[in-house]
Length: 476
Image (tube, rainbow, N blue to C red):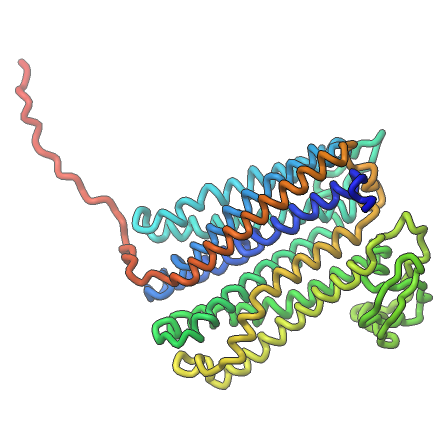
């Protein structure tokens, strides 16, 4: 257990723990906030009370995720100053300002209007409340934009150069709109939205299977809303993921080689085989066992272009210049891609049943296996997102800032015992937070929607105040 005495490894483990745990919560808030905008908009348009009750019910799960996300996100950012001080000093002029934008613009916007969204029912006019919900959704997704901008910049640095160990910005907008930024933001946006849709769909499916007639009618509505959205989101997510893969091929060839566990280089003009399953052996620099599709990788990469450039293998780089955990990257990538296609397939089967008229409230309860499929699909989006971030960040190694700053040079020189103590403390606290979130989340779901809530009035204009005549004596 030599890693227990390695401060860099322990700092990486601590950041991985906090990042993986934190990622669970904003995923649902960013996607579900858009769903809340949709259902509240439908209520304002139709005045159907079911849409109002949907907005009230799902906002409970939203605020639970928001609270845990805030509690887990702050310690993660503080690590840039504690465990990664040399890195922060080197890139703080740009990276630090982007994180500042996320906190001051996005988080404060979301938090500021959250009170109106949660407590403004019946206290502000419905249109003002709807504006508050829109601003919450905008703030949540703006946060995604800034975080992915910062991370994309670490993947493909742009807009300046390292001078005397510090990154000097020469073009701020070029740094923001770095080569990875657009696809990364879109990929994460659709990932959070798709995950939220299948979580809402899975919970709705659970209610529909309860055989409660009122619940079947009520949650058949939310089930169809998420299905209608998934028709566009699921295929788009796959396509944007493919575009991101093309960018990795061109700009991070070591990551591409690790994603495919490809050790030998395939010459230009010669399609590379695609490894379907393998057991990578990093020490031996080969795969101990492999099932591959001849020319498969070449066909995937040639989806939009002729592959005239070689597909480089890991042996093209020295061991210290390439990712170490090839097996983790390899299988994380396949888990992410597999879940993406699985969710798209489930969406397609459900659409067929919808077109056959099997999703109407009287019949939808009979679609037992389809609904069970949605229930089991509910957590898959989380797994796909976590796997994608593993590929993205572990595959970037041994660089913190790709091609510029190595991870070993970015870590603070701290005693390993201190890092291990904080790592264990984070593990304990986050375990408690996870148990609490699961308990309160399941409690919200078991209680179900409250159909006794009063419906807000059309207008909340203040009642005119009657003024009585001033009967004070007139002074001469």
